[in-house]
Length: 316
Ligand SMILES: [Zn+2]
Ligand SMILES: [Zn+2]
Image 1 (cartoon, protein in one colour):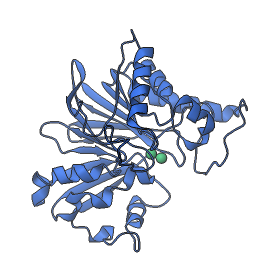
Image 2 (cartoon, protein in one colour; image 1 turned 180 degrees about the horizontal axis):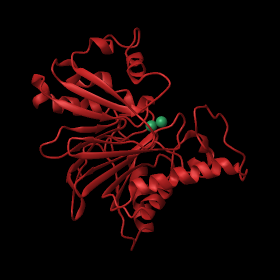
Image 3 (tube, helix red, strand yellow; image 1 turned 120 degrees about the horizontal axis):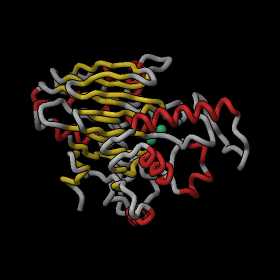
Image 4 (tube, rainbow, N blue to C red; image 1 turned 30 degrees about the vertical axis):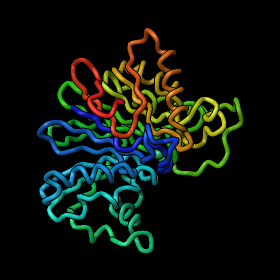
């Protein structure tokens, strides 16, 4: 199984000299294996480059099928979809999976390309697009891949996915806050809670259950890709934004005994040098701990096999 990062940024695309090495495109990860249709997680701006590469294969002649798992429909996870080249070739098929909402998923995605926001309506795109609505703990298959999901702690709710093929597995968990200070549902939270304010017991129990389910989803995975947008200080200031820190991700990874953790969904203001420093600091803290650690970067491909997650492209 190969996992390739096409966009690793949170919130908004930030190309420029201070983000060139990790990359400025927003969330998009491709999961590939010989003989299976590509599985894509999230359609941030990174999906544009992936679409161009796929157009060089069966998708260029309208014979391609891809599966797109959406964590949630915030801009940084869907903004690249109208620029995904395979959508414009008749005969291609795209299956889109996302959490069920009050509005049908097709309407949610169609509204993204309504006039005057985009020139081509979803219904005019030539590929055949099918939407699959998911519950919070659904299991389904995509060819030989078994897919499971669980709910994350994020405003308007996001899903984490585990993709298992034979012995190999990857979990994608973005976006999520830690499971201790705020329970996010379907509302905008404008202010952080007062420091030290106790959480209602029912909310604390719901968060504990959500965390347990996530740890079980991650159990023994070869690779865990996790929202680590914030430093500890940034989290203290913005706990109501719905993102985690590397320490939160490391705690989940260690509890679930995953092989390698990929820091992901980097803050838009994070420079390459700052991201290097975060990675170095975390690696030092993990000295002697059996957990591999990488910071996701655009173009990085990790191959998962019995010996772990090895970089096979873009690690320079
Ligand atoms: Zn995001
Ligand atoms: Zn989000």
